[in-house]
Structure formats: C-alpha cells, structure tokens
Image 1 (cartoon, helix red, strand yellow):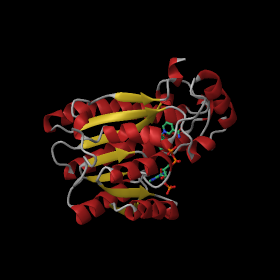
Image 2 (tube, helix red, strand yellow):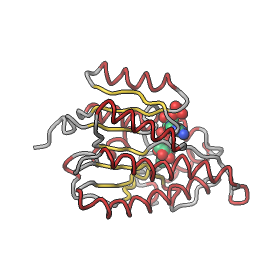
Image 3 (cartoon, helix red, strand yellow):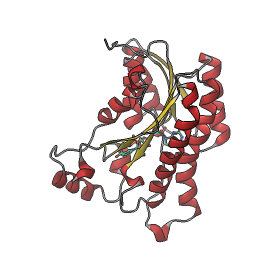
Image 4 (cartoon, helix red, strand yellow):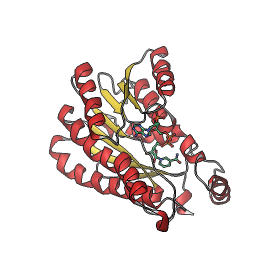
Length: 252
Ligand SMILES: NC(=O)c1ccc[n+]([C@@H]2O[C@H](COP(=O)([O-])OP(=O)(O)OC[C@H]3O[C@@H](n4cnc5c(N)ncnc54)[C@H](OP(=O)(O)O)[C@@H]3O)[C@@H](O)[C@H]2O)c1
C-alpha cells in the first residue's frame, strides 16, 4: 500500500523553491509530509507566499535566502538547515539562471553565470547536502531538453545542464553504497516566468502546438509529480537516470 504522506519526518531543501517549478515541488513535498526548506535569492515575497501556502495547509518549513551560485552563501544556507533540523533527507537542485546568446556571443560572463548557478551549485550543494544526509537520502536535479537538443540562444545554459546530468551519474555510483539515489528530471517547455523570458517564446509556443498532441505547455505540477516520486521510498531502485518529462514533445 502506498502511504499518502510517505515523506513524514523527512527534511527537504529545494533551491529556487519559491517560484515556478520549485514552488510546485515545495508544495508537493509538503503535502507528502516533508518539512521543506525553501531557498530563494531575489524575490522574498514569492518565498513568503509559498511558505504561507504550506503552513496554511498544515505543513511545515522555513525560508532561506541564498545565492546558490556563491559558495559562501551556499554554505551558510546548509548551516541554517543543520541548525534548525540537524539533517537533510532530500536535496532538490532546482534554481537556475542564465543569459541567452548563440555560440558566437558566449563569453566568460555568460558561461560563468550558467556554470556557477546551475552546475557548480549542484556539485557543491550536493557535497554540503551529503554531510547532513542519512543513508537512504534522495538527490534530484532539474535539467532540460536543451542539454542534448538544440534550443536557439541556449548554448551556455544547455552546457551547464549537460554538466549536471554527467555529475548526477557519477554521484549515483559514488553514493550507491549508502542507498542515496541521485537522478535528474529533464523538463520540456514548462509554463513559468523563465520560459516567458525566452527571446523566442512565441515560436516555442507555436512549435509545441504544432508538434504535441496535448496542445499545451507543461505545468510546474507535471514536473513536480515526477521529482517528488523520486523522493519517495518507492523510487529506491531508480538511480543515475535522466527522466524526460515533456509530454512526448521530443519524440515527434
Ligand atoms: N520553465 C521551463 O520551461 C523549464 C524547462 C526545463 C527545465 N527547467 C528547469 O527547471 C528549474 C526551474 O525553472 P523555472 O522555470 O521554475 O524557473 P523560474 O520560474 O525562473 O524560477 C527560478 C527560481 O530559482 C531561483 N533562483 C534564481 N537564481 C538563483 C540563485 N542565484 N540563487 C538561488 N535561487 C535562485 C529564483 O528565486 P528568486 O526569484 O528569489 O531569485 C526562483 O525561485 C530550472 O533548473 C530550469 O532550468 C525549466
């Protein structure tokens, strides 16, 4: 029998858990019984609203401001988790940032931003998470179909996502002896602020309508459902995988 609150007693940290996909993940983890540490960087109000939604529904959590692309800030965030909860069962590396540009426009600034906030935050965040994680813990990173497919102006972000997927596989092997699973969820086009900021948003929308039978973008909840499954005891035999959640978009 599958329990309705399979994550009761678990402590989760969701980077960028205040808005978009991260918000849907935070809410779902709380619904499943976890205490959720919600990280945000610039928009405190969004974080407060997400935490309030959790608390209004009888859940529990805390808000953590940190720039995950900065190692000192990242470290302080994990220290706060340790001080409050003493452990971390679930680490979701979701926050992402990047600048748009074709290959010829990629410079150090563009490259470093994507690598710092996306790839390095996953690597160094996981190292910190591991110090607090009991055996049987769960690590999930958000990636995108732009890691292996061409998305215009997405070169540096796509490279950072490919790095995440590679690191995830190494982690899965190295953490296997402790029954800590490590997976990545690769989203198709999901209706969030980030997608709306794409320079080619209208073209993406048209392409989604043309190619997919569902005739819709993905929702943050479509992604959260899979991420949160990977946090349950039932997912124990799934590790080192990139799971694509795109409504079949990349098949067509
Ligand atoms: N939307 C899509 O179509 C799509 C598709 C595939 C994969 N994904 C992946 O899914 C994840 C979430 O995407 P989203 O669309 O939900 O993004 P979003 O709507 O732009 O939300 C980004 C979240 O990350 C936080 N954040 C950004 N920079 C940060 C930093 N330096 N330190 C800490 N937090 C930071 C933001 O907090 P503040 O607002 O406080 O700064 C916000 O909570 C990303 O990894 C993205 O690559 C998205």
